[in-house]
Amino acid sequence: MQARLLTIATMACFLLVGGASAADLKSAMTPEVQETETGGGWTFSFAPYFWAAGLKGDVASFGLPEAHIDASFGDIFDHLEFAAMAMGEARYGPYSVFGDVIYTKISGQGATPRGIVASDVSVSAETFAGLLGVGYTIFEDSAARLDVAGGARIWSAENEVSFSGGILDGRSATDDATWVDAVAGLRGTYSISPEIYLTGWGLVGAGGADVDWDVAAAIGYQFNETISALAGYRALGVDYSKDGFVFDAVQQGPILTLEVRF
Image (cartoon, rainbow, N blue to C red):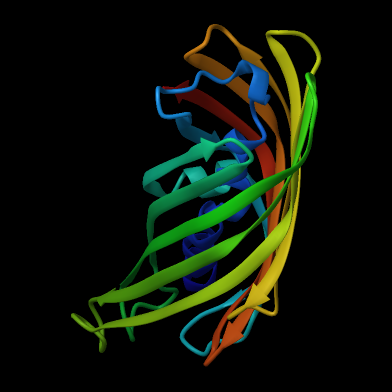
C-alpha cells in the first residue's frame, strides 16, 4: 500500500506539467493575424487548463526499491486533494515570453498488514513545476506560424510518510527533490479558418534529469477576439534519479484549455 501511495504521490511531479509545452499551448494556439494588440504592440494571454493524464514508468522514494507503475487518471484522481494549472504569454512581434505553473497536492492512507510496526500509514505529496521560456518566430504567413523556443523548467517534489499506532506511532519521514532542466524545440500553429486552428509542439532537454521531453497536438476554436478553447493530447516524459529519489516515467492524456487574451 505504501509503495502504491508513494507512486501516486510522485504523479504530482508530472502534473507539473507540465513544462514548456503547456506554456507553448497559448504561444502556438492562435495565429498572429488573430491576436489583438495593445497600444504598445504587446499581446497577452492567460489560460487555466485541465490535463486528464495517466502515468506509466518507474518511481522510488525514501531509498526504497523502484516500483513500476501503470496508473490511469482515475487512479490518481481518487487521491487528488488540490491541483492548479495555468499558463500565460506576452508577445511583441516575433518575440515571446511564456510561462507555465503547476501545483498539486495528493494524499492517501492505508492500514498495514499486521499493525505491529504501525497500524496506519499516511502519505502526502506536494509538487510544483514552473517554466519560464522565450520564443522567436522563424516563419509566418497569413495562416501559419512556426517558432523556435527555449527555456528552463524547475521541478520540486516533497513526499511525506506518517505512521499511526504500533512501534512507529507518531513518527514521520520526508523525502524531497528539486532540479532544473533546460528545454528547447519548436512550436507551430495553422489556421484552418478564422475560428478553427491546429497547434502542436515538440520540446526536449536535460539538466537535473537525464532527459526531459514534451510533445502535443491539439485543435482550437476562437469564439471571439478574447475567448478561445482548445482540446488535444499531450505526452510528457522525464528521467530523474538522485539519492534514492527516482522518477523515470511518461505521463499522457487529453488536455482542455480555456484561454483569455487581452
